[in-house]
Length: 447
Image (cartoon, rainbow, N blue to C red; front, side, top):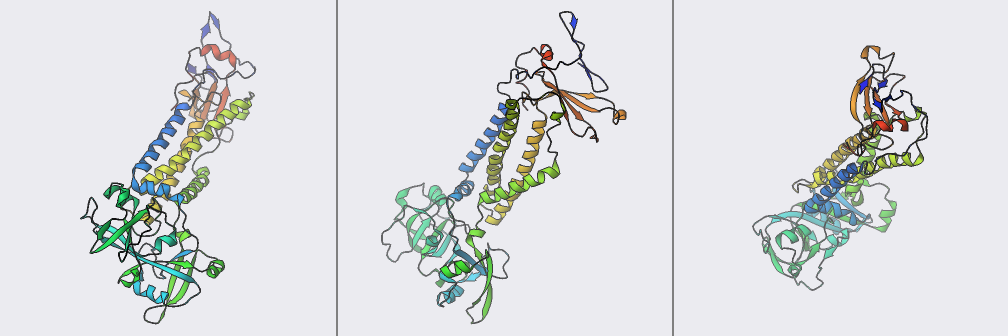
């Protein structure tokens, strides 16, 4: 095929000794030829990526916990208290003595407190007994306040022994997922405890990497600093209008100090919420980073049928619909693949990766759609240079691509001008079918 310098395609072919005419006949739209499976490989590729990322999410304990965390909601009448000068809520700032002072005073804001501090201790009976596990020494009402589901919960009397609740990860890895471990007496550090159940996957949304919870009636009797979860009274819940608020409360030395209360429902952001926020930002940033029009198809005198238009827009919508779960799952894999990261770092990784993958994925989706035939959705091939750069303002200059099914030619300008700013599609009528007799050509070139 020889391309003319002024943008006109010259096809010097002959059939049965007769030269085909260079004019285009105005006929009705012919149905797409050999278009079975057009674009199906693109959808298969995207579905494969979704399946692989989902399998990775299920195989990695940290990712699986976040993936399943949407099943559990933190009650809205809970707040975490920290000192007002602390900028990072993942660092413990409240002393056990401070909690004892608050419990001994009558107040109208909170009706109960739960204190916990994370201590790294050994755990007998585990397959890695010498490993230091993160044990949360907590008040016995902590998991009840958080509404954490506990499997195999033992209702029997444990006597004077504190109860130990294992995380699902430690139960699976260290105890082989044996339900008979419940009721067994194990040694946690220097004291004995009875295993009373297994916490559900993804139910722990508070600061601190916790492998097990040692529930005690007087956890605040110990020294050191930890975290405080407070339950708001009904009056305080109705009067509160902000997710963060400050308060002045007595300190152990008798003076008053400033503290910051953060609603747990606001602090424990769900991965799905971060994904939605990042996806909305990506959609808003898309017009500033790429051109949205798919081409000046309306300039042609040929009108596509509603079925053809619907198939083209459905193909675009299908790619976007498959892109979104890929963004969500891959961002979770990147953020929670390493269990050494804290919650705040993982949230930042998920936010940045979700925005980046979604934005570049949308740009790829639009670019892929522009490079396809609007009739059969086959990938356009055989690019050829047309025109001369020196005549850019007199005639169009750019690249011409062809649909191997014979539906038309795509003209892409090299330099956008006021009269030729975006790509244009030139349809070929059915009289050109004889030039494309090969079977299966339209189904080639998906990528």
